[in-house]
Length: 394
Ligand SMILES: *Cc1c(COP(=O)(O)O)cnc(C)c1O
Image (tube, rainbow, N blue to C red):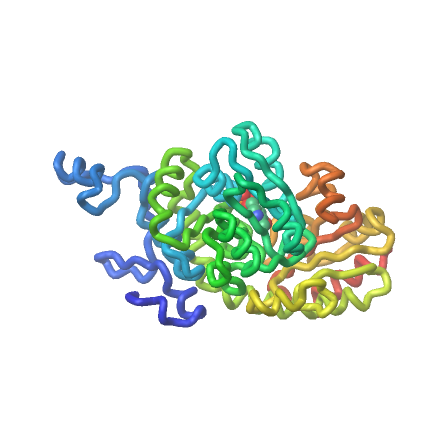
């Protein structure tokens, strides 16, 4: 489909990235092949020199992978995308491409747990320094900037506290200091937040979550805003090797067709569930971007076109109350991950954010009684009944 950019997001979700083959397949087939035949020696040599267009080897380029990459690039409004084997592989690609020994990165303190661990235990070995700040506090971001700051990495809404950072303002801080802004857009997906519109230079996703949406794939993506950045990212990915495979690309690309439908439905249900929880006597507080009680409600309205499917809440009675809820809740499944059609419930302090350590969790305001839920597409009244059953046992 030519000039897909002019169409609405609904239409883009269905058609973006699709390549049509000579047999007329309506969806891009799975090119489950590791390598591609050259017509002759000159053809092979020309492909390697880059003077002729074509496929060589699947780690470098594959039509099914490319279809998925193009779809996400279109949805985010970026120039190009790079499919990775997981969200963490995508984050690693970002850091490895952009940072060198001696560089400094500022990272949201409320961030996916392994992102913290990647910076503090892996990239720290290459003399890359990281400062974790509350990126919803612009003064804190400004004062964390150093002469060697090259990158600000923001997750918004942040994991698992759902704290929201002002992308427009942070991009100005980055650019005024000769640094770049990268955004982990996993929690909103491009259907509800497009960070390039607010000055971001790079976006990454765990496509394991909303983009695929069916809890059956682990995959990631990096999207670059400017085409000039693409060759260095491609070269880095080709050599570190953490690429997505054709089959998973096919599944994610299929999931994307219903992305907007799914997340809009999930978001509507989530608001209803958040309101129910906010009025519940056993709940201390609720964080959901669609509630007026959210501290960054106004920023959410400015940069997000919906409120998403993630809710965090604190039970009265802390960790023990949480244990009772999670062992008794109905329909909701006790599992980490998020963004799928099935509703999930989990406890960050003992699960997703356990590797951070208690001190870092306390700094990021991840309390021991915090519960995180991902709202799926089941009937919302039944989801509330399922929660009520668990809460009634406390
Ligand atoms: C899950 C997740 C990641 C990591 O993605 P994987 O696909 O599990 O490697 C990164 N960021 C956020 C916000 C996530 O939820």
